[in-house]
Image (cartoon, rainbow, N blue to C red):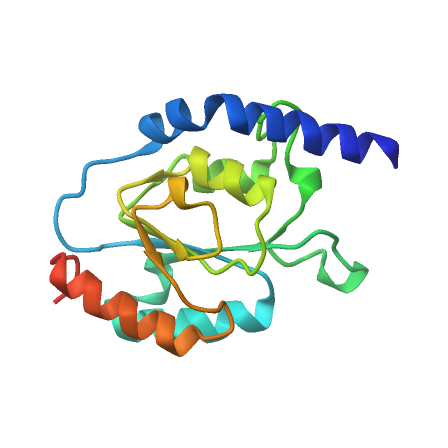
Amino acid sequence: MIFTGFKRKSNQIFFNKNWQELLEKSSLVSNGNIKNALIIVNSQIEKDAVENVLVEILKLSVDKIDCIIFQQKIKKEQRNLAIITPKDFGWNGKVPSEKLKNILTKNYDLLINYSKVENVYVNLLILHCKVAFRVGFGHLNKKLYDFIVKCDPTEISLFHTELIKYLKILKKIE
């Protein structure tokens, strides 16, 4: 449909104009150790794998880790899953989706973006989330993150090794 391109472009213009202001509003002051986390992934399989590793690394229970699965399109059999698509976003950076409002009202100590490609909708989501510490891969938009791990997105184990090392240095985990 022709309007999807216009909508994406309006959101990209909104992002380009307002990213600094939104990032300042959504940034929280860290109060020590990580007590909860938000992760953004591309598939259900990736969610399960990453969630299990993060429970071990961060020493958090599964209910303290919220997960957003972002995909461009949903298949009919996936409609019951908590998958976010561009349809959950409005024009000019608005997020009218009920699925996302619950996540956007919470405060998080850590956000990790496991996305393999740069996406304006994921970037908007990151800007709207209230987070103390944001982590992403080196190929993503560096201005949105507090910490970047420069490795290939397929090297998840290397990413986790570096993440653990620096979270310990920063005294975010023990």
